[in-house]
Length: 281
Image (cartoon, rainbow, N blue to C red; front, side, top):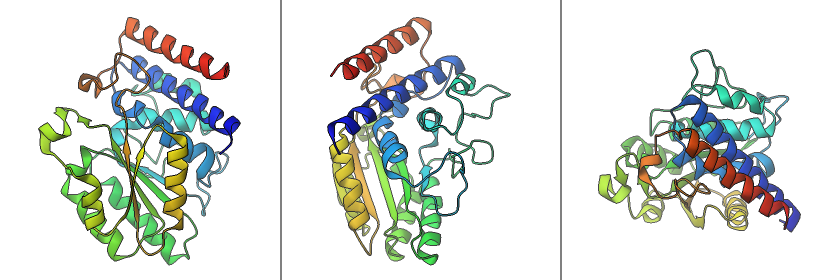
């Protein structure tokens, strides 16, 4: 990836973060913390990696994406809007009663959403089904799914992992957002899933550990996942919850709280300053 391409991805991720803040502020509810931590991976997938077309969201050979941690819908919506699936202005309608942008992704109403999610643990199972379909059809598309580190405390996740390995679903890439915080505290305090890489390896996965905010690391991991044959891949991303908004970073109380006006203005000012700094490089 050249310097100009990486710069564009960095700018896009910052705009995605602005969309997350815009949506949750106007909704007066939502989940900004774990949305902000996945901006880089979503930006990379939707703007560089995946075979998708905003003008034809249902094209048969498109790569699929499942946001298994469906409460991070603000991040997915902001990414889809930036990619041209629907107007960025619509992010302000998040969670409104008459809006198609519900609190969790709904494949029946939002262009570009491949699976309705929200019940934690279930998204990865849907992704496994999609990957099996791809295998049956001759590996015509790849499937990506993002899970939270708290989400993998769900037993269904590991049933899906057993299935993925047993069926040799090598078009499936499972991405764990390891920001170490969930709604009630650190993942260790609630119900520790550690050691995460070793667990996925024991379930038959090709395992890669990366810094989830590093584009070179993301690119390398995705390329290794595509090159791996005969088994699914798990990418374990170390991330910062609330990334790029100073008062939200690594603060568990921003898991499911919306910024008030002063906080909104501060967040947008910080993100605008970061955008200006990147543009000036």
